[in-house]
Length: 279
Image (cartoon, rainbow, N blue to C red):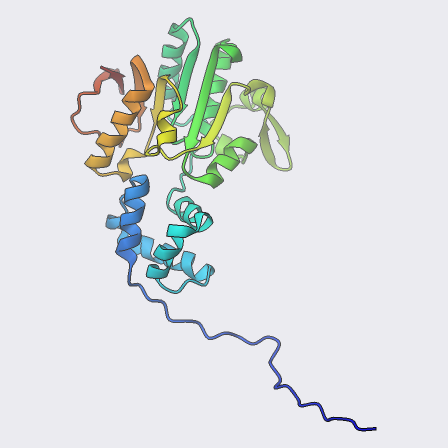
């Protein structure tokens, strides 16, 4: 009986460490132009900061050049959305700029019929829930208003839909409001769904067709988004807002948001607060 001697395979170390590849920064401008074209955000002024964030983003996915990342986002929707989520993180909290919210609620209360409000972008939903809470506190029933929150950031929309928030997000609320509208659970505050049947959230890019298909609104909130746009995209944005607003609809912007001269809105002041009315 013959036994053939088996050839020994070369041993491979179990915990072999790969040599890190050298990162090629060529193609960064292509990424920045893509972001500006798709979502309006101008990151060229933050070139050095965003380069570091994008490089970490790439290396985490074993992509070793911005040119390769640019190729990936043309065909991989998951990487494209992850990139959008990376550059559109926006932290907020309940009852932020409360006086401005209260002014919008006053406009809503003056309307005896159904009032429709849009928050664009809505981040993780605090603004949407805040408006609903304030309307409830003024005895406006849930079936008499609807509030839609949209954002391009998928993680933000998922968090808004869950309705689970930290103590930090609720730091401006007193215990009465916390007890009425939230359940304290596992060190977090969970929204009581019975109060928020009139709110909804959607992942939408304001420059896509889906945005114009949202319907008509009486009030639009868009705070601290236009500061990231140049004048071309600011004008494009408010034109799209005007298409969604009813006649004499109100537009509320952040204090740092500036819009160019335009035929769509007239600016009004209410003491220290300002808002825009559709022409």
